[in-house]
Length: 62
Image (cartoon, rainbow, N blue to C red):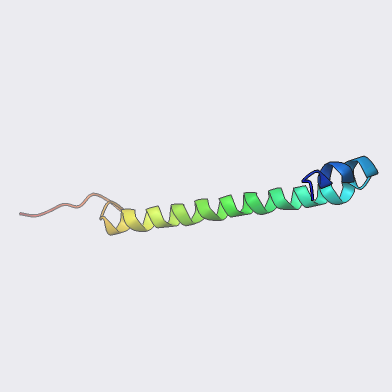
């Protein structure tokens, strides 16, 4: 294995399989990033609520 197999595949005309592999790989990476951003947003929302910064301002009667 020399690491040039994808380029040899393109030279032989087997680019469709390589293109499919690259597109699936990119789609998986995009999905991972979107899920990570969703988890981050949910975690930050939870922290914001636990810190008491959500909702209308409180009126303390002291």
